[in-house]
Length: 116
Image (cartoon, rainbow, N blue to C red; front, side, top):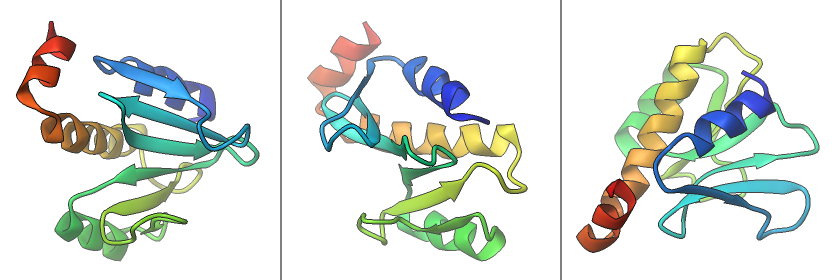
């Protein structure tokens, strides 16, 4: 997965938006005004995604491409290298999980607005 594919996949999620709230170097994807993924534009080969804490530990133990979130709460965020041995399917599952965690944390009214 390259950064363009990552962007397209994130924006395909219902209610997903993108922006540069932290400056020109970090592209941020949100749902309901809450961040579900960040990617550095200078390197573009890794991203930060939210993750259930227990699942985060398991993934970090299984894959050297997944480490505690850089500049993030390391309990809840992973940094994922897209250039390693993770498959496209696995990368999408990580993105899906992050999106779902954030979406499910939104108030029901906001979820309904997004789902239409």
